Length: 622
Image 1 (cartoon, rainbow, N blue to C red):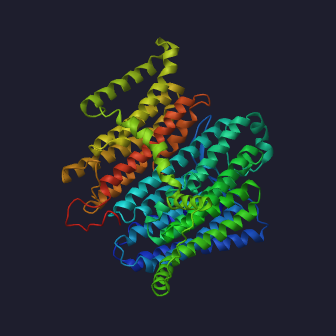
Image 2: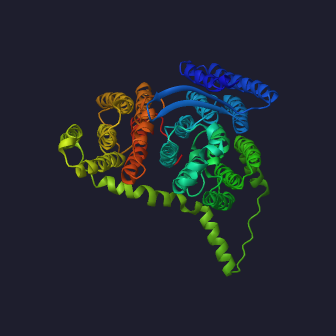
Image 3: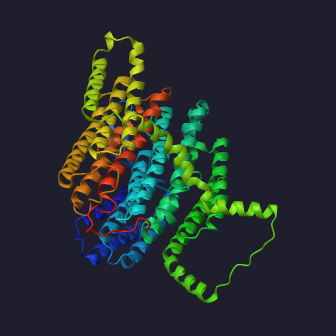
């Protein structure tokens, strides 16, 4: 029975790959194919569930593919099925099927009709991969696919200014959750000395001694998973990205941010419950996060002027309550609450245009002006102050930018001299010096060898921060990002002396993506003359194939699961010791800003309004 679990990933994956080659103008073919794939997958799932329940519903685990194995590390794809998977996969299948049928009519005659259904199938593949995952590595693969599908759907109207900007903002916040997830996996590897599968994790006796003897490490793992879950489920203080993500089509907002993607943080906490079930501090933190989010989000939703924002914050508030239920151990209640919230928010978002139309007519014919109360009191001042705070969404967006991104932008701008021939010569010289130190370690004092990994990891972070703030040529920013990845690899080589195969796993994907991206940018530069990062160029209108290939190059560079670099990132992190906090911090931040900088180049070169005026122009405020 367990061998059948892979079918639920292979069906949507095959559907996504085939849909890429369907003719763009055949709307009926595209929609019918997507609906058939999702419907068939749902039908197979229902049959499988009935069979599973008739055979005493055992926990199923299937270790399928081993991507890498060494004496101290094993990276494998694992699938798992229990009641949590049943609920999440069932709700996901039903909602994806219904929304895809609705989208057939809602997206009719949209220019990006095919692109929309391609992305829905990609999302459904990632979602199934996440909920059927049997270990953290497999879950992270689905986690990343859902993240990039979110970016593509938020920026669906890519000729407009705000969707592209808000898509990048969402990526900024998502990368925080991604790196916290990776750090939690890294600490689990050091704590348990193996790649943990969920079926082992639920065996409390297996890990009780490790968690008891390393309480502080266990607390850190729990906090990191909590941050990752809070980011994905838009809990405070990471809530501001969710209403911005509503820039995409209403149907994608319904399936992503009303029902499925936004509940993935709940799924993560359910899966990691054995790690923190005996840690009172983690439970208290989860309750605090959930309680604050539910109260503040509910108050914000009551005063917003846009229906999508109201629904978004209402959904966030309910997820905060689900977090509290999980911390209290009410898992069955949390699953029921998840299903109810998912179906309700999907319905609300799908009917929101009709409701707005009705309310406008009602306001015209039955409008009554608000009675002004001239009385002034202290309580009224507090009430109005609270009202203004809620209207401004408690300035969450401002504080995230001011205290999270602004310091790094300031650092990156201080290194504006890193460009041109001077930069290339300096990079080659420092890198050759690092390689020389690696091959001549016996003749170099140990104190210098210990100092070098921190230096190289710091250089990698500086390079990628410079790319993050680059406003000049796109090729310069791309060169900075690639150089940072080389310094990351050099850091690990000097620090741990790992097997060369581990470095090759990482660098093979990086080099391929770097060359591809450089070629594309060079060709675009030769055709359009100017591709600086000071504005959006919208080159996807005239060069859609270049845009698609460059997007793949960006994904390969940031470790998306399409190249060996995805496995390589996990391998590199496993070579950092628990006591090397400085190196870990530098490399983690490099990982965060690599993804942000690469997608920023893609957005500015290929998205936005086209600079040639004979293309359709959307208003900046649209």
